[in-house]
Length: 171
Image 1 (tube, one colour):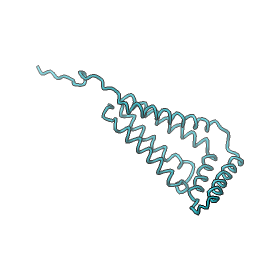
Image 2 (cartoon, one colour):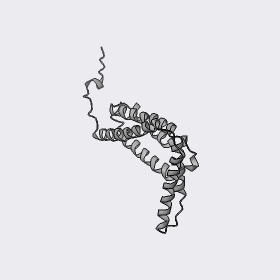
Image 3 (tube, one colour):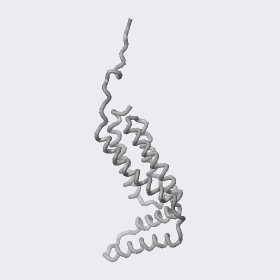
Image 4 (tube, helix red, strand yellow):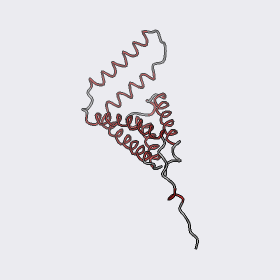
């Protein structure tokens, strides 16, 4: 009679990588703060014209301050960020509700990876993509400054890369 032994039954469970634990804690802290902020946005009141005027004044003061130092730079990215902030304020409940859904996806993915399941990595990639396009739900793509997408995308890719280094440990 031929006997087949399952090698996985004889192996001791591998210890969780320290790097994965550090990434998990950092993700929990960051995404947890995001969830709290988005929750506050969902339960907040609708924006008033005074709120929008305050944003416009803030950006006008910033441009005036920069011009005071004699800069002749193009202020288009600053004006675009003003438009983004106004769009977010005008659609705060929608933006925050979507943010809660996206952040929950990221938390779920991080938790599953921490438990050793590759499925969590896929959820984390979805979260990374959704957080990158989050602004697009409230404002047109041409209004979002390129540096915002570049920085957010670069950070997301870096974190996905760091998590991918631990895929061999996951099932």
